[in-house]
Length: 358
Image 1: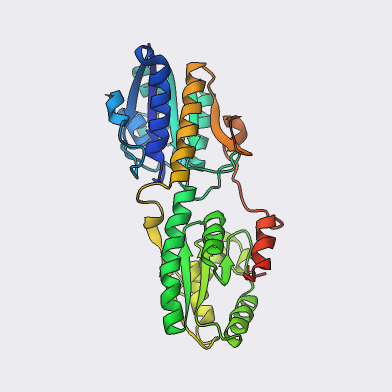
Image 2: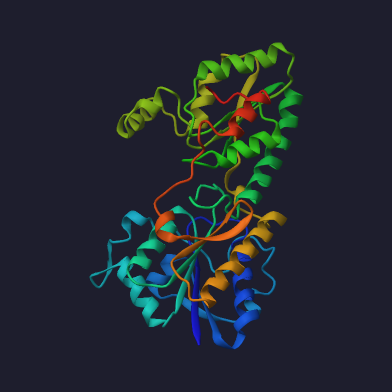
Protein backbone atom coordinates (compact mmCIF):
# COMPACT_ATOMS: atom_id res chain seq x y z
CA UNK A 1 0.00 0.00 0.00
CA UNK A 2 1.36 3.42 -0.98
CA UNK A 3 0.52 6.26 1.41
CA UNK A 4 0.45 9.75 -0.08
CA UNK A 5 0.14 12.95 1.96
CA UNK A 6 -1.13 16.17 0.37
CA UNK A 7 -0.90 19.73 1.69
CA UNK A 8 -1.60 23.20 0.29
CA UNK A 9 0.79 25.86 1.52
CA UNK A 10 1.05 29.64 1.52
CA UNK A 11 -1.53 32.05 0.13
CA UNK A 12 -4.58 30.40 -1.36
CA UNK A 13 -5.55 30.70 -5.02
CA UNK A 14 -7.98 29.27 -7.52
CA UNK A 15 -7.49 25.66 -8.68
CA UNK A 16 -5.79 24.27 -5.60
CA UNK A 17 -8.77 21.95 -5.37
CA UNK A 18 -8.64 21.23 -9.10
CA UNK A 19 -4.99 20.18 -8.82
CA UNK A 20 -5.82 17.83 -5.96
CA UNK A 21 -8.76 16.52 -7.96
CA UNK A 22 -6.47 15.73 -10.91
CA UNK A 23 -3.85 14.04 -8.78
CA UNK A 24 -6.25 11.94 -6.69
CA UNK A 25 -8.25 10.81 -9.72
CA UNK A 26 -5.04 9.94 -11.49
CA UNK A 27 -3.94 7.82 -8.55
CA UNK A 28 -7.25 6.09 -7.93
CA UNK A 29 -7.99 5.45 -11.60
CA UNK A 30 -4.69 3.65 -12.03
CA UNK A 31 -3.97 2.07 -8.63
CA UNK A 32 -7.18 2.25 -6.60
CA UNK A 33 -6.49 -0.67 -4.25
CA UNK A 34 -2.88 0.32 -3.69
CA UNK A 35 -3.28 3.96 -2.63
CA UNK A 36 -4.17 5.74 0.61
CA UNK A 37 -4.53 9.54 0.62
CA UNK A 38 -3.89 11.61 3.74
CA UNK A 39 -4.97 15.24 3.79
CA UNK A 40 -2.68 17.42 5.89
CA UNK A 41 -4.55 20.38 7.35
CA UNK A 42 -3.48 24.02 7.11
CA UNK A 43 -0.33 23.57 5.05
CA UNK A 44 3.05 23.03 6.64
CA UNK A 45 1.53 23.97 9.98
CA UNK A 46 -0.50 20.76 9.85
CA UNK A 47 2.64 18.75 9.05
CA UNK A 48 4.45 20.38 11.96
CA UNK A 49 1.63 19.76 14.40
CA UNK A 50 0.47 16.39 13.05
CA UNK A 51 -2.95 17.55 11.87
CA UNK A 52 -4.10 15.15 9.19
CA UNK A 53 -6.80 12.68 8.28
CA UNK A 54 -7.22 9.77 5.93
CA UNK A 55 -9.28 10.88 2.93
CA UNK A 56 -11.77 9.02 0.78
CA UNK A 57 -12.02 9.20 -3.00
CA UNK A 58 -15.43 10.82 -2.63
CA UNK A 59 -13.85 13.73 -0.69
CA UNK A 60 -12.37 14.90 -4.00
CA UNK A 61 -15.31 14.23 -6.33
CA UNK A 62 -16.95 17.64 -6.63
CA UNK A 63 -14.08 20.06 -6.03
CA UNK A 64 -12.84 20.67 -9.59
CA UNK A 65 -14.53 24.07 -9.89
CA UNK A 66 -14.46 24.98 -6.20
CA UNK A 67 -12.29 27.91 -5.12
CA UNK A 68 -9.96 27.91 -2.13
CA UNK A 69 -8.64 24.67 -0.67
CA UNK A 70 -10.54 21.93 1.13
CA UNK A 71 -7.44 21.26 3.25
CA UNK A 72 -6.89 24.83 4.42
CA UNK A 73 -3.59 26.67 4.14
CA UNK A 74 -1.12 28.74 6.17
CA UNK A 75 2.18 30.54 5.83
CA UNK A 76 5.36 29.13 7.35
CA UNK A 77 8.20 31.46 6.25
CA UNK A 78 11.24 29.53 5.07
CA UNK A 79 13.61 31.74 7.03
CA UNK A 80 11.96 30.53 10.25
CA UNK A 81 11.73 26.86 9.33
CA UNK A 82 14.74 25.96 11.49
CA UNK A 83 13.39 27.83 14.52
CA UNK A 84 12.81 25.73 17.63
CA UNK A 85 9.11 24.93 17.74
CA UNK A 86 8.49 22.69 20.76
CA UNK A 87 10.29 20.15 22.95
CA UNK A 88 13.59 21.44 21.62
CA UNK A 89 12.73 20.41 18.04
CA UNK A 90 12.80 22.70 15.05
CA UNK A 91 9.85 23.03 12.70
CA UNK A 92 11.62 21.01 10.02
CA UNK A 93 12.38 18.25 12.51
CA UNK A 94 8.70 18.13 13.48
CA UNK A 95 7.74 17.82 9.82
CA UNK A 96 10.10 14.91 9.26
CA UNK A 97 8.93 13.22 12.44
CA UNK A 98 5.26 13.44 11.43
CA UNK A 99 6.02 12.29 7.87
CA UNK A 100 7.57 9.14 9.35
CA UNK A 101 4.82 8.76 11.94
CA UNK A 102 2.25 8.78 9.14
CA UNK A 103 4.38 6.22 7.28
CA UNK A 104 4.11 8.24 4.09
CA UNK A 105 5.69 7.06 0.88
CA UNK A 106 5.36 10.52 -0.66
CA UNK A 107 4.41 14.07 0.30
CA UNK A 108 2.74 16.28 -2.32
CA UNK A 109 3.12 20.03 -1.80
CA UNK A 110 0.97 22.55 -3.66
CA UNK A 111 2.64 25.88 -3.10
CA UNK A 112 4.55 28.94 -4.24
CA UNK A 113 8.19 30.02 -3.98
CA UNK A 114 8.64 29.76 -0.23
CA UNK A 115 6.78 26.46 -0.13
CA UNK A 116 9.11 25.07 -2.79
CA UNK A 117 12.18 26.02 -0.77
CA UNK A 118 10.81 24.12 2.21
CA UNK A 119 9.84 21.19 -0.02
CA UNK A 120 13.37 21.04 -1.40
CA UNK A 121 14.81 21.09 2.12
CA UNK A 122 12.59 18.14 3.02
CA UNK A 123 13.85 16.39 -0.12
CA UNK A 124 17.43 17.03 1.00
CA UNK A 125 16.53 15.45 4.35
CA UNK A 126 15.53 12.25 2.56
CA UNK A 127 11.75 12.62 2.13
CA UNK A 128 9.98 11.67 -1.10
CA UNK A 129 8.52 14.92 -2.46
CA UNK A 130 6.43 15.97 -5.46
CA UNK A 131 5.31 19.59 -5.89
CA UNK A 132 2.75 21.43 -8.01
CA UNK A 133 3.26 25.16 -8.78
CA UNK A 134 0.51 27.43 -7.55
CA UNK A 135 0.46 31.21 -7.25
CA UNK A 136 -1.46 34.10 -8.74
CA UNK A 137 1.91 35.83 -9.28
CA UNK A 138 3.15 33.34 -11.93
CA UNK A 139 6.68 33.81 -10.59
CA UNK A 140 7.78 30.21 -9.99
CA UNK A 141 10.92 29.37 -11.90
CA UNK A 142 10.78 26.43 -14.31
CA UNK A 143 7.15 26.67 -15.40
CA UNK A 144 5.60 28.91 -18.05
CA UNK A 145 2.38 29.13 -16.07
CA UNK A 146 1.23 28.52 -12.52
CA UNK A 147 -2.35 27.57 -11.73
CA UNK A 148 -4.25 30.44 -10.16
CA UNK A 149 -2.65 32.99 -12.49
CA UNK A 150 -5.27 32.85 -15.24
CA UNK A 151 -8.13 33.17 -12.77
CA UNK A 152 -6.47 36.11 -11.01
CA UNK A 153 -6.05 37.89 -14.36
CA UNK A 154 -9.79 37.44 -14.93
CA UNK A 155 -10.61 38.89 -11.48
CA UNK A 156 -8.32 41.89 -11.88
CA UNK A 157 -9.49 42.53 -15.44
CA UNK A 158 -13.17 42.46 -14.48
CA UNK A 159 -12.49 44.86 -11.59
CA UNK A 160 -10.61 47.33 -13.79
CA UNK A 161 -13.14 47.06 -16.60
CA UNK A 162 -15.86 48.14 -14.19
CA UNK A 163 -13.70 50.90 -12.76
CA UNK A 164 -12.82 52.22 -16.19
CA UNK A 165 -16.44 53.04 -16.96
CA UNK A 166 -16.72 55.28 -13.91
CA UNK A 167 -13.35 56.86 -14.71
CA UNK A 168 -14.74 57.86 -18.10
CA UNK A 169 -18.05 59.07 -16.64
CA UNK A 170 -16.39 61.37 -14.09
CA UNK A 171 -13.20 62.34 -15.95
CA UNK A 172 -10.94 60.76 -13.35
CA UNK A 173 -7.56 59.11 -13.21
CA UNK A 174 -7.85 55.82 -11.33
CA UNK A 175 -4.73 54.18 -9.92
CA UNK A 176 -5.52 50.52 -9.39
CA UNK A 177 -3.29 48.44 -7.13
CA UNK A 178 -2.89 44.84 -8.27
CA UNK A 179 -1.23 42.10 -6.21
CA UNK A 180 2.45 41.49 -6.94
CA UNK A 181 5.17 42.57 -4.56
CA UNK A 182 8.24 41.25 -6.38
CA UNK A 183 7.01 40.61 -9.93
CA UNK A 184 4.56 42.25 -12.30
CA UNK A 185 3.15 39.35 -14.33
CA UNK A 186 -0.38 39.79 -13.01
CA UNK A 187 -0.43 43.59 -13.32
CA UNK A 188 1.05 43.53 -16.81
CA UNK A 189 -1.37 40.96 -18.21
CA UNK A 190 -4.48 42.38 -16.53
CA UNK A 191 -3.43 45.89 -17.56
CA UNK A 192 -3.07 44.90 -21.21
CA UNK A 193 -6.40 43.06 -21.10
CA UNK A 194 -8.11 46.16 -19.72
CA UNK A 195 -6.50 48.65 -22.08
CA UNK A 196 -4.78 50.50 -19.24
CA UNK A 197 -3.00 53.73 -20.14
CA UNK A 198 -0.13 53.17 -17.71
CA UNK A 199 1.23 49.91 -16.28
CA UNK A 200 3.88 50.00 -13.57
CA UNK A 201 5.66 46.84 -12.40
CA UNK A 202 8.40 46.10 -9.83
CA UNK A 203 10.91 45.08 -12.50
CA UNK A 204 10.93 48.59 -14.00
CA UNK A 205 11.49 51.48 -11.53
CA UNK A 206 9.36 54.29 -12.86
CA UNK A 207 10.12 57.88 -13.75
CA UNK A 208 7.17 59.87 -12.43
CA UNK A 209 7.84 62.62 -14.99
CA UNK A 210 7.29 60.12 -17.80
CA UNK A 211 4.02 59.02 -16.20
CA UNK A 212 2.78 62.60 -15.85
CA UNK A 213 3.75 63.45 -19.42
CA UNK A 214 1.95 60.40 -20.76
CA UNK A 215 -1.25 61.12 -18.84
CA UNK A 216 -1.25 64.81 -19.80
CA UNK A 217 -0.71 63.84 -23.46
CA UNK A 218 -3.77 61.55 -23.28
CA UNK A 219 -5.81 64.38 -21.76
CA UNK A 220 -4.77 66.77 -24.53
CA UNK A 221 -6.11 64.16 -26.93
CA UNK A 222 -9.49 64.50 -25.17
CA UNK A 223 -9.25 61.20 -23.29
CA UNK A 224 -12.21 60.99 -20.89
CA UNK A 225 -10.78 58.65 -18.28
CA UNK A 226 -7.34 57.31 -17.41
CA UNK A 227 -6.53 53.92 -15.90
CA UNK A 228 -3.17 53.29 -14.22
CA UNK A 229 -2.48 49.67 -13.22
CA UNK A 230 0.28 49.30 -10.64
CA UNK A 231 1.76 46.31 -8.83
CA UNK A 232 2.15 46.44 -5.05
CA UNK A 233 5.93 46.49 -5.22
CA UNK A 234 6.59 49.37 -7.63
CA UNK A 235 9.41 51.80 -6.87
CA UNK A 236 10.43 55.15 -8.28
CA UNK A 237 13.83 55.49 -9.94
CA UNK A 238 15.10 57.25 -6.83
CA UNK A 239 13.72 54.63 -4.43
CA UNK A 240 15.27 51.79 -6.42
CA UNK A 241 18.72 53.15 -5.57
CA UNK A 242 18.11 53.21 -1.81
CA UNK A 243 19.04 50.53 0.70
CA UNK A 244 16.13 48.70 2.32
CA UNK A 245 16.70 50.67 5.55
CA UNK A 246 16.81 54.06 3.82
CA UNK A 247 13.74 53.14 1.75
CA UNK A 248 11.71 52.31 4.87
CA UNK A 249 12.84 55.52 6.58
CA UNK A 250 11.90 57.60 3.52
CA UNK A 251 8.40 56.07 3.35
CA UNK A 252 7.95 56.62 7.10
CA UNK A 253 8.95 60.29 6.85
CA UNK A 254 6.56 60.86 3.99
CA UNK A 255 3.78 58.88 5.75
CA UNK A 256 3.39 56.62 2.72
CA UNK A 257 2.05 53.14 3.47
CA UNK A 258 2.27 51.68 -0.04
CA UNK A 259 3.50 52.39 -3.54
CA UNK A 260 0.11 53.09 -5.10
CA UNK A 261 -0.53 55.71 -2.44
CA UNK A 262 2.88 57.19 -3.22
CA UNK A 263 2.01 57.51 -6.91
CA UNK A 264 -1.35 59.05 -6.08
CA UNK A 265 0.42 61.69 -4.01
CA UNK A 266 2.88 62.35 -6.83
CA UNK A 267 0.16 62.83 -9.44
CA UNK A 268 -2.36 64.82 -7.44
CA UNK A 269 -2.30 68.46 -8.53
CA UNK A 270 0.03 67.70 -11.43
CA UNK A 271 -2.71 66.81 -13.90
CA UNK A 272 -6.11 68.26 -14.71
CA UNK A 273 -8.24 65.29 -13.70
CA UNK A 274 -9.09 64.18 -10.19
CA UNK A 275 -6.86 61.30 -9.06
CA UNK A 276 -8.29 58.39 -7.09
CA UNK A 277 -6.73 55.15 -5.85
CA UNK A 278 -8.43 51.76 -5.63
CA UNK A 279 -7.06 48.47 -4.28
CA UNK A 280 -8.41 45.22 -5.75
CA UNK A 281 -7.34 43.11 -2.78
CA UNK A 282 -7.93 39.46 -2.02
CA UNK A 283 -10.77 38.89 -4.49
CA UNK A 284 -7.92 38.26 -6.93
CA UNK A 285 -7.33 34.99 -5.08
CA UNK A 286 -10.96 34.03 -4.60
CA UNK A 287 -13.89 32.50 -6.39
CA UNK A 288 -14.13 29.62 -8.82
CA UNK A 289 -11.17 28.97 -11.15
CA UNK A 290 -11.23 29.79 -14.84
CA UNK A 291 -11.62 26.99 -17.37
CA UNK A 292 -7.95 27.35 -18.31
CA UNK A 293 -6.86 26.97 -14.69
CA UNK A 294 -9.05 23.90 -14.18
CA UNK A 295 -7.50 22.24 -17.20
CA UNK A 296 -3.94 23.20 -16.30
CA UNK A 297 -4.29 22.15 -12.67
CA UNK A 298 -5.89 18.84 -13.65
CA UNK A 299 -3.06 18.09 -16.09
CA UNK A 300 -0.38 18.98 -13.55
CA UNK A 301 -2.12 16.85 -10.93
CA UNK A 302 -2.36 13.83 -13.23
CA UNK A 303 1.33 14.11 -14.14
CA UNK A 304 2.14 14.29 -10.42
CA UNK A 305 0.14 11.10 -9.91
CA UNK A 306 2.11 9.39 -12.67
CA UNK A 307 5.42 10.38 -11.06
CA UNK A 308 4.23 8.95 -7.75
CA UNK A 309 3.16 5.67 -9.34
CA UNK A 310 6.56 5.45 -11.06
CA UNK A 311 8.26 6.35 -7.75
CA UNK A 312 10.03 9.27 -9.38
CA UNK A 313 10.36 11.76 -6.55
CA UNK A 314 12.08 15.10 -6.06
CA UNK A 315 10.33 16.92 -8.90
CA UNK A 316 8.04 19.89 -9.51
CA UNK A 317 5.50 19.32 -12.27
CA UNK A 318 5.54 22.19 -14.77
CA UNK A 319 4.24 23.32 -18.13
CA UNK A 320 6.84 24.35 -20.70
CA UNK A 321 6.01 25.23 -24.30
CA UNK A 322 2.57 23.67 -23.89
CA UNK A 323 3.87 20.33 -22.61
CA UNK A 324 3.69 18.99 -19.05
CA UNK A 325 7.17 18.20 -17.79
CA UNK A 326 9.05 17.43 -14.57
CA UNK A 327 11.67 19.79 -13.14
CA UNK A 328 14.19 18.76 -10.45
CA UNK A 329 13.23 20.53 -7.24
CA UNK A 330 16.79 21.69 -6.63
CA UNK A 331 16.68 23.59 -9.93
CA UNK A 332 13.49 25.41 -8.94
CA UNK A 333 13.78 26.17 -5.22
CA UNK A 334 15.10 29.61 -4.33
CA UNK A 335 14.76 31.01 -7.86
CA UNK A 336 12.11 33.53 -8.90
CA UNK A 337 10.81 34.07 -12.42
CA UNK A 338 10.76 37.81 -13.07
CA UNK A 339 9.93 39.80 -16.18
CA UNK A 340 12.96 40.49 -18.34
CA UNK A 341 12.99 44.21 -19.12
CA UNK A 342 13.71 43.34 -22.77
CA UNK A 343 10.81 40.85 -22.95
CA UNK A 344 8.72 41.11 -26.11
CA UNK A 345 5.49 41.56 -24.13
CA UNK A 346 6.83 44.88 -22.78
CA UNK A 347 7.73 46.07 -26.25
CA UNK A 348 4.29 45.06 -27.47
CA UNK A 349 2.62 46.89 -24.57
CA UNK A 350 4.49 50.08 -25.48
CA UNK A 351 3.49 49.67 -29.12
CA UNK A 352 -0.11 49.67 -27.87
CA UNK A 353 0.54 53.11 -26.42
CA UNK A 354 0.91 51.96 -22.83
CA UNK A 355 3.39 53.84 -20.64
CA UNK A 356 5.64 51.62 -18.51
CA UNK A 357 7.24 54.52 -16.68
CA UNK A 358 10.52 54.34 -18.57
